[in-house]
Amino acid sequence: MKQSVKLIAGNWKMNGLAASLAEVETLKSRLAEEPAACRVALCPPATLIHRLAQTVAHSAIEVGAQDCRAETSGAFTGSVSAAMARDAGATLVILGHSERRQEFRESDALVAAKAVAAVETGLSPIVCVGETLAQRQAGQAVDVVRTQVMQSLPLVLAATPFAVAYEPVWAIGTGLTPTLEQIEEVHRAVRAAMIERLGLPAGWMPILYGGSVKPDNAAEILAVPEVGGALVGGASLIAADFLGIIRRAS
Ligand code: PEP
Image (cartoon, rainbow, N blue to C red; front, side, top):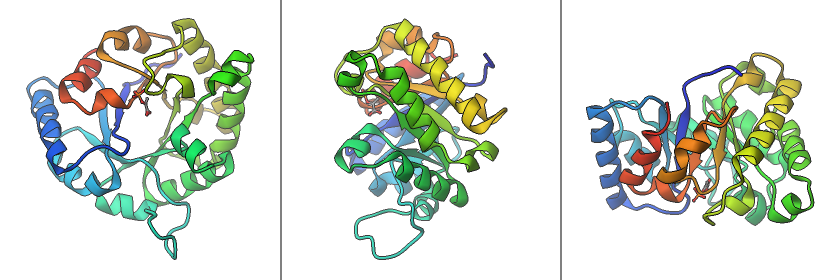
C-alpha cells in the first residue's frame, strides 16, 4: 500500500448559513496554531462556497462543492455548473453522494459525466460509492461497490488528482459503522477496481471512508489499511468535532 497525506473532507450537506462561518474561523485559527498533519477540506452548500473560500484564504483549508451539473451552462434551473463552483472558489467537488444517487436518481453514467465536467473545469472530484443495507445483508457489498467504481470513474481521471469515498449508505448519519475488517475488505476491492479501471499511478489516489466518522472512532478507522482519509458529514459542522477527527489523521 502506498502512503500519502490523508484527506479529511467535511460535507455540510444542506446545512449552514453565514453565521456558520464562525465555526470555520475557529477551525482556521486552531489549524494556524497547530497545523494539521493531513489535508483538510470543507464542502459547504453552494450558497456559502464563495464566502467560505474567502474565510479560509491564506490557510491550507481546501474548499469543495457538493455537486455540479455535467453540462457547462444552459436552461437547468437551480443547478450549479462545475465552472460556477470553481468561480466561487471551490477546487474540489463531491460527486455521486448516495443522497444524490437515491433522491435524484443519479446513475453511475451521470456521475462519470459530472466527473468529466469537473476535471475539464479544474475541479478535483471526490467520487462516492457505497452499498445499501439490503445489499450488505445480501452479501453484495463488494460487488456493488466494485461496479460503481468501474462505471462512475471516467478514464480522464487517469491523468488528474481525485479521490474515491467509500460510504456505506446505512452508515451515513446513523451512528452505525462497518467493522474495521469490513472497511478494509471494501477498500481493498475499491483499490483493485481503481487500478483495473485507470491503471497506475491513478489507481493509488486516496480512498476515503465516510459514514458516522466521529472523534472517538476516527483513529481506528483512519488506521485501517487503504483508508486514505475521511468524508465527514455531521461531525464537520462543529469546529471542535471536526478538529477532533483531523487531529487523529497522521
Ligand atoms: C456524508 O454525508 O458523507 C457522511 C459521511 O455523513 P455522516 O458523517 O453524518 O455519517
